[in-house]
Amino acid sequence: MERDLIFITLQEIVLRDGKDLREAQQYLRMRYRLDADELVLKKRLEKILQTEKAVA
Image 1 (tube, one colour):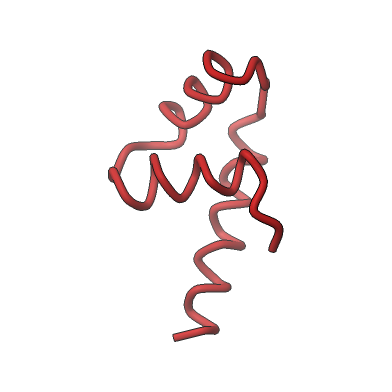
Image 2: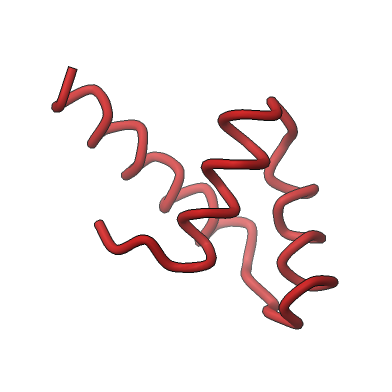
């Protein structure tokens, strides 16, 4: 999976810091003016978690 802004944000805010998707959504909106739907973030997070499970 490409390491784009959404990927990096989900990794840092949700996985590392343990915050929820709404905070990641707000971060993307405030920092990058990127309006990402919560459903899109949820699906991307699921893909990241599946990839990590496959590697481990």
